Length: 93
Image 1: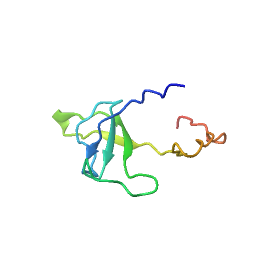
Image 2: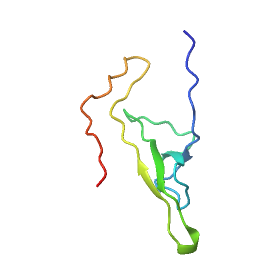
Image 3: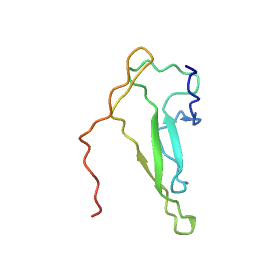
Image 4: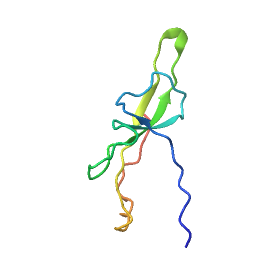
C-alpha cells in the first residue's frame, strides 16, 4: 500500500503567541521551538489553531483563535486509537 500524501502546514516557529491578524477559517500550526530544534517531548509541543473571529483593523479588534485539542495520538510503531464514541453533542446557547 502506498503511503498517504499528508498535508503539511508550515509552522510558525519560535513563538507562543497567535497572530493579531486572521480571517475566519484560517488554520495555523505553532511551535515554541526553532525550526531545526529537536522536540524530545513524548507528545510534541506544536499546536493547531483555527481563527474563529476575523481581525478588524478599523476598530483595532484582533483575531480570535481557538486551539484544537486532540483526543488521541499515534506513531508508526503503534496502532492509532479508536475515536471516542461518547463526545457531547454541541448545542447552540
